[in-house]
Length: 231
Ligand code: DC
Image 1 (cartoon, rainbow, N blue to C red):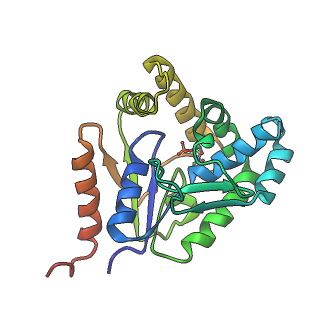
Image 2 (cartoon, rainbow, N blue to C red):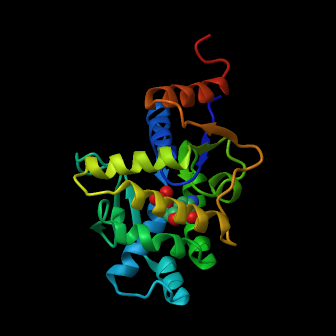
């Protein structure tokens, strides 16, 4: 049997989304990059000028906001379409302003509770690859396959810089590195569901792997759980 629920966690720019998206296509499963839910709440707070420090107001927003994540509705390089109250914010949640505010928003326990509830509803349907920070530890601790994806901070900063430059944005290596280090620090030291590997997760270090090698290795991990395949 193929794993029906796959949980992939790891720090920012570690390659977890690339692996998760690839596996979702490989298996024809639903793909949910859970960071987009935290980003959508952050975007909506900035858009409505709700102060990021106002925990009660941000929590209320997370509980009420109508967020939809669907397969891509445009052919512009997106892996999915994200809508808030019907408005397409797929690219708007990737700005430096959202990057800067999303970690504190995702540290609020009430926000996590509201969004975790939604993630579990989706996971309960099965045939899903879910990517985030606490998927294997909190959201679906009984997932069939858990990966914890890591790469050196320098490798991650180079990748993120390249990603930004490919989109035509200006990105200084030092600034990207500092932002990643700061987010790692907030994500792993917060009290609510900190970033850490589940004890039964497979550690997947891809610092020295090419993208092709990384994806082949991910496919093999899935196939190895399914010994009857191709016999
Ligand atoms: O993966 P990302 O960079 O899009 O995540 C955005 C933020 O959301 C990041 O600060 C970590 C947080 N996050 C989280 O706390 N739990 C998740 N399951 C997914 C993301």
